[in-house]
Length: 109
Image (cartoon, helix red, strand yellow):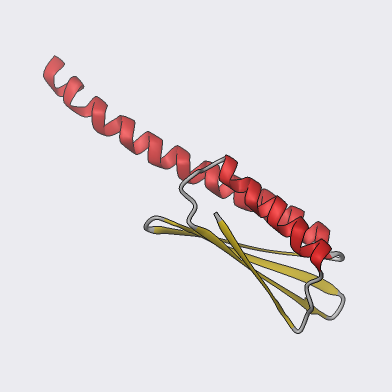
């Protein structure tokens, strides 16, 4: 998975860049078919905002989090994305299993 990081009115240093790649890149552990991730960092007043879009085949997952520090915002957005990935996989697996079970229940009647 490729991680594209950009800052709006914010310069991204190497340490923060590595931290984001590690945290967001770890999401591939939960779902291997993630094509890429687009991370946008910005500041508004005293808040640090992280916006992430994950590209999956035929699906997008988006999350945005705000915090006092950029590292905390990255952690929060990672947790949100992890939850959305789990929900997506549960729906997809459930739909797949229902499709296989439907003919078997009709044949039993």
